[in-house]
Length: 421
Ligand SMILES: *Cc1c(COP(=O)(O)O)cnc(C)c1O
Image (cartoon, rainbow, N blue to C red):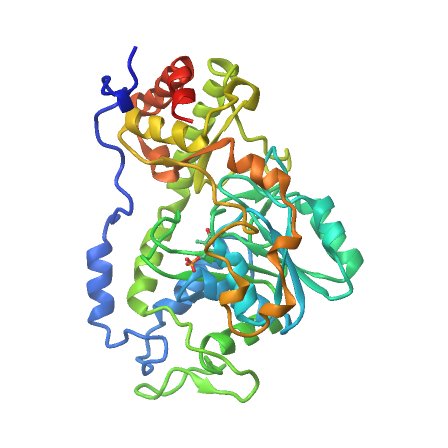
């Protein structure tokens, strides 16, 4: 048996589902917005409800929060979460050592200090005991990241944050549709931040969504988003500016355009259906890993309270004892070649990630030093996990089965990968 990287026949040669993909009625919806005379949140009032407001309302419903606020990027949703809940320059904010760099850089952008805490091996999310160890009298908030397909231990984190009077903020960029018992991701902390960048499960190319159930936090969030402006309580006269000016906060323009909001509103209409499809495919793969491939691989192990999963990447963990001396990048490369799609390793832990460098930042770089953090679990996860993008989970049964066949083939031929190390 020859691996595809050595010129052997690949396991799967047909196409994988496209991502992103325009869903039904998208062009009609966009045309309607283009003809509405309103392309921006800050445009003039037309008498019709802005797409921005409708999307905010619908998305809040989707994740069980009182308010939803569309923004220009997930990074902005994070900044707004921090600013509108009262995090200030010099405050320490704890986050997991394993996340996309934006979780940390959003904290740095508002002048707060990112403090890295290690993750749990089983579910790849921030460890509550590591959080406790990272708390100082300057800690103002914890930004929990529900990474790839699992939620962090929200019971423990809620309790810790309450006991220490610290804000709990959720980075839900990767957790659409996930639930902790009956509570959707984003509705548990004081604020939740979602990204709608192209790779995410709900997308407008670039964009984000902020959610909260606090009246005060929402009001401030709206003003931070709009250069200090917000919708007035009574609609303005037709033809007049839709937003009114307040002198309460120093904001920026972080509005999403009405056109992007239209794309999201359209995507939201079948997000649940897609969530369910992804879940069914993931549970098939989980079962196969546990039964047919358990000698070599295992799925991640979510907390039982994480009753409903949301998928950004499907994670396949190597049983490290069965893969000694083999580089994770070599496994990913071999799998990608068998399947004709990209699989890859996790993020590089943030204490070693070249995309995060306090020395290159303006501002408070002298107050934090990434070399002080040790993140053994994050490193171990980095060296033993394979990621498949969520669009793969929309494939048909034969394609899904080919993933299992390809993993088996690579496991059987693993000596060949040892030679490349
Ligand atoms: C995508 C992502 C972000 C940032 O979102 P942008 O829309 O790219 O600014 C933040 N955190 C996590 C965990 C993400 O996956």
